[in-house]
Length: 282
Image (cartoon, rainbow, N blue to C red; front, side):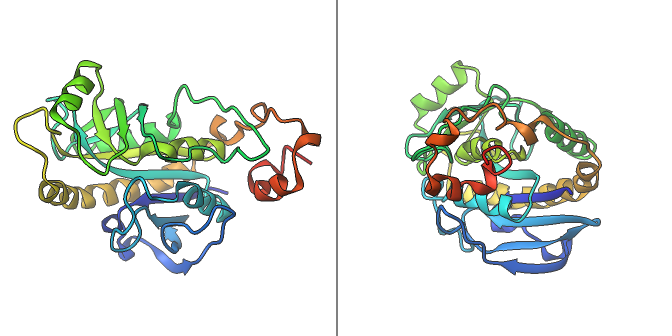
């Protein structure tokens, strides 16, 4: 059964989008998620919403408990994750208020735990194509019918919470990156390890600092707010199509990725990751 998870800022959540809403506190072996999870239905499809930064925006990109967030979504049966992300543009043709469905990501984070597989168990997943092609294709097809949308692009994920220096921004442009943000990773890596389809709807808020003027949080918030309705609209128009897609390779990546011998996996590790490895490690 398909269940669509939505990760985004609290502004993305609109109760009128959902039916049969219920808030749930979900416990995980990795601590507490950013907030209560909100379950419901949209166009007959089961959905789960999670505020990435928590209500009131209390967690910075570096302080988000990404493992708990992804694990909690998995625990509630989420199969596909739509991640809404506000980003800056590193190319003039990617304009503020445009929508980008990226197909690549470059990691510039330094402080984040990016795997479920540590402390006694190792898995090496493939990550050459970090976002689900099927899910991304649906999101772009839907977005492009109504909005200025870009199919593909490389998302540079920086640590933050500070914005870039001019020197950094210009280097990123010379390296050919398209957009810059702070939350794509490790969300995408953890979703892949949890065998969930994952794609990003990136909304451009600014031109970063390479263009002319320094980026201000007021400008980011203003354009992010303008983009919230577009993101809600794209999600609403996508969920039924997502539910009709068949099996995806994202849903079976751990079969050949776990390299630790079963007899070397401790009981503690088995219990901690039972939700992820239970069908592979008996």
